[in-house]
Image (cartoon, rainbow over all chains, first blue to last red; front, side, top):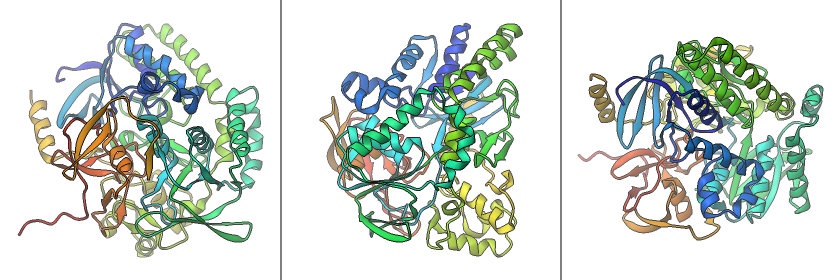
Length: 465
Length: 96
């Protein structure tokens, strides 16, 4: 892998596959680096395995999941250098660091597209570090990849369309859901209504309402306006406590599944040094990009939900869009051809992403619990740091998150601030009585994956060739 | 606490803390431990019980020792026949 390639794509979800297919269509053979063992990303996780080994479950997982099979089949059939099991731990203009089978390699690439997708918005809740408390997406991954479902009393809590999809999938898979606790404030609907035009004629809206109707038909309690959600137990979750309509309720639970929407996974793009800004309306960091989705780094583009949340249906078009820019810069396409392709991709993205503004307002996460009031809530999971500990350090006039590390090691554990950075940023902004900025987020540096010193040392030898 | 909905199409045998455990081919190490039901790990900071939260490579609460290498992300490692998996139990103690 030491000779330079024209195009390397990180991620084999719908955006990465869309980018790779576009490159292949124009006679360029891209390298696709995928942390997972098979293409599909999270949305189409294990689609080949499910189709082959348990096709009956395609009905359980829903039509949108099954629709991924065609994209994955096209990806497999195209002339693409697909590298499963390859984790990218570093990226910059001109190359990346790739870890696979315990060997680190540097790959030189003239153009790079990061299609690293979304992650669930990490929202600290009291007790969220207890075993048995997982994100809703984690339960979905276990169902798709391993046909595992939570046993015992299952409580689903949070907001966002994925929460209802997951609950519907689990119910179809035979899981007895004890309750669905909805945390989105009722006022959100009023803020969302001006964007309701984006829903007209969109089939996904009917689908979403269909999941909710089906869940209610099963008699699963749907509780609106839930606040002060907390998981309790000794070595694992045993109870879920919440407030609603002035009263407090305690539910016995063996599994609590949390979800508060998805945000771009910023880790690799930010560690590359690409410029980001805090998008206050969406509540997350977003990369700056030009009209070809190229970041502030030459030859490093972003596509799919890693850029902005546009949803899985828009992702292949975003991948094509980014790939067209790469092909243009590589001199493999005429400008007019690339621009025509971009116009088509742009229209497709706009169509697919029309409901996003409404959904975003409807499921906007309130400041509390993003800035936990309860001092005992763990914010930094890796270093087991509570909101109280962080607030006490902030009161000492710590200027910013990078200095906070010296006080508490916050954000310095194995996850490298993936789970605490959004909360810590809001805590700084709250302390200073202003809005969140990019500077409130930890600076990220490679490697962004756990790697041994020996593996790094071997990489340096290879890079010296 | 997770249960498998149906017998897997193919199985492999791994060693979990020395004991033979049947896993579905294609399973992640984290899925095998969750299906095994017992405790997952003890946190290196403070020693509390921890288990995977996100299952897609972000939370790093699935860390596990695989074939002698500590701190592997269990949710991203696919099982293989004979793989040696060890739960990590709190802070490692250096031999004196």
